[in-house]
Image (cartoon, rainbow over all chains, first blue to last red):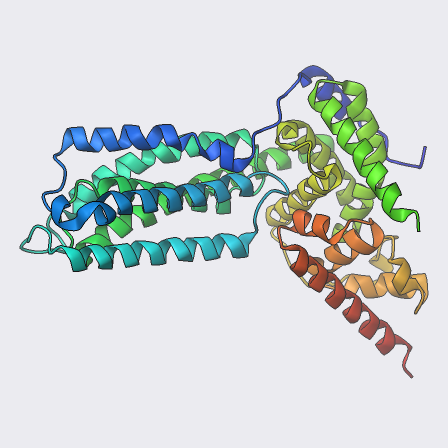
Length: 232
Length: 189
């Protein structure tokens, strides 16, 4: 018709062999709702494993459950951005993503300061060390289960640029896990919360980034192999 | 004057083709390829400035269109979705070839026969505009080509490049201003 390139035979064959009806993916915000299932399960698990923090009454509803909700909602927001970023033409953009990440960090710090102001928590001999690794491990494992779910959702979008998406997903699930873990950890000392709980968020963000980079590298290698095969 | 309704009709037709393709219609994919392979190839050509590479990336783009067809939202622009995939494929190939220089310049005789914006043609020859386009950074060249040559709206350009509509508008205007500057430089004695 208009001198458009001919459909290459291998592409025609691929489409013919693999073509079957697909249902369009739901919008990112709706897909992120899957974490609505994860959150109550995670809360129930944390409360079943360990008793609720002893200073819950002192903190009141707002600084106990309110903090959990705020961090869950903010984390889910980051996950929504991550899922959008994984779909071509649906991302909010790097700038928006970075602003959201910074906002999440600020929220986390503000909540930690507010909680510390309301309760001295359980005194520990060395706030920077005592309970720290246990908190990191338990909340990290909790976050890892959420990250695994989100990673599957990202993978289903067949993204070509997954690293930023992975970073947002990791930070989001890390924040959600830290939020849930707030119900259990009785140490409110800022050194403990910022280093170990913040460390959970940073660790999961790095894991998410690693996942995304691996996905990108896998795609790149596959593309190189296809190009090499095409050039004979 | 009739450009806007034409554009809307074309967008509706492409969206219908995408929906049929998602429903498993092979002919719809072929029609989609027929409709968009030319412009997408021209877009990739303007970025890579290498016809062989542009052909390779065109195939890769439609390969990914096929693989990620479930990610197309029927309520959105099919054109922007496909160009976003082409943009990502180009970035991936740049990383792959480890030569992601954003300001690389080619010798004049290497400049390909890429389409040039009609607006720019009014103040210089086609060849001069083509050479000037080659001197723009990839970011700016993309914005100019997508809006002024491929006819995407600023909203669609923003979607493709992962930036806001305002940023797309700004980038395109700055690119046109730079283009004018380069051309003026070239014509001044």
